Image (tube, rainbow, N blue to C red):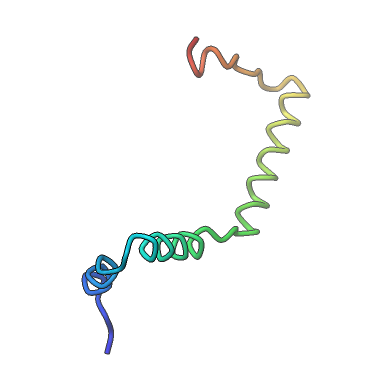
Length: 69
């Protein structure tokens, strides 16, 4: 028998607050697994951008322009 999301939520809401917190923590941790391929792609992109900046192919934007003063 397959339990639906609504049934799981109803069961979770019957837990005491500490147990609900533990449940949420465990679910979030299982979703927050690093993906080595995505990390590698971002590293490659960061290195390309840094190389372009150092070569004078692109200019930086002052933080004040982006974040405001």
